[in-house]
Image 1 (cartoon, rainbow, N blue to C red):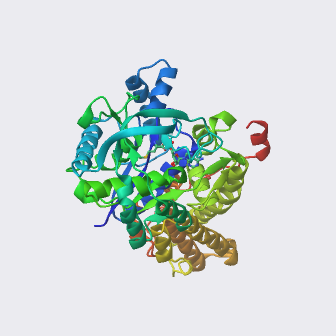
Image 2 (image 1 turned 120 degrees about the vertical axis):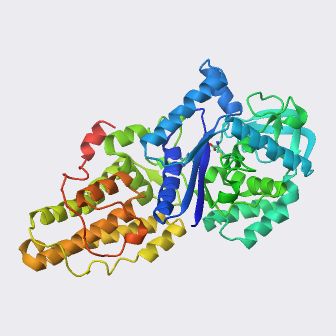
Image 3 (image 1 turned 180 degrees about the horizontal axis):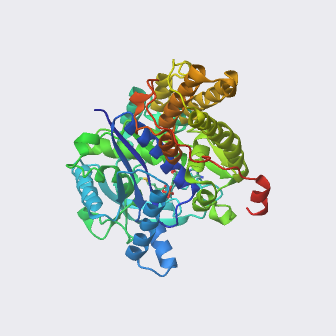
Length: 492
Ligand code: ME8
């Protein structure tokens, strides 16, 4: 059995989950579900990043101790993912004792390898990004990544010999062109690595909320170092299920944190003598109604509000449909409504409703010759999903939805009877059954509703060929309802 280990970033608990977190987690969930459908042994990891200055400050602002604060916030993330049907196998918190153990073992390993030395860090620090910024990188005196205020830091610190790994990293990118995906984003990282790598400050004296640096107590580990190691602690490295699942098949991350995953992480692993992950996929960013997302702009749409109004599956569908995985895109409620009305209601909902109506009225045998399977290339869809190309995969599935809808009209099904009608219904139901399997990673609730109405068993991807239809159909109303744009604009 093939294994598939997929991760999301672990999110900072300084604030509740937003649409960006929901996007990353949902996309990873789609791949995890797809691989389960293939019959793979899947390990899907998400979690929370609970240490560091940013989280410490957020706790202080609420007048809470950090432990109390992170417990409450982590619970919100867990609850949110549960409500969104996210099927993670483990939820890793960086305050988990297992994580602390793994981190300490890992640090010891790279310390013993001679890759950590004592020095002094002098430069700038961006707390919202938890990132060191050099004098040269500053943009108008602000953080070059997020444009926010930076703070001068001058303190004793331990460093990781990142510079030592420059050539090994370049060799890795060379040897494995798929390591950094998508390709168009890879060049930026590769060029930066070619320019040279500074050693990385990995401990802080002025920060208290973190994992202690055991080799010199009184220093706390840099939050990013702590965080990256979660991908190992979830497997209980060096024992546990490490051998079963490592290397990770794909770390799904936003483009903002590609550097940490594509440069720092593999270098740390090399130092510890551990194989690098197979792939780091950095996806694009959502703007909201054309504007950069952020609380300060007051336009952070709450995914809970969205799903309460439109349903979880509609949001999942929008995520995949609206933005090719890897590119940037814009989130707008108007566009979401347009897709619900035009595609979920008119294409899919209508197809299922019409077909089940025909099937329920029909008294004869639902049997015939496969016709609607011709344009459907399952191997092609599998290949697209292997390349993480959800955008073209959903389009290929949708083409089958539209083809099946057209078939009803071409056959003028409403004029048929007897064996001819039985054959048409057979093709419709088999096509819908296959569509429901293919759609299950994308829209699990909808897929399940279709399956129940068809009266068929849960099936994997090896059941996507047309066979004998074996269901007992029972129609249960429409899958989706239409929304009016006017109502939305009055009440945004
Ligand atoms: O960076 N569009 O956590 P974080 C799409 N704790 N995705 C977005 C987005 C947007 N506008 N904004 C954020 C951290 N994201 C670290 C990670 S991993 C070892 C440690 C998503 O809470 C995107 O996936 O700031 C991004 O990488 C992540 O949220 C950042 O989450």
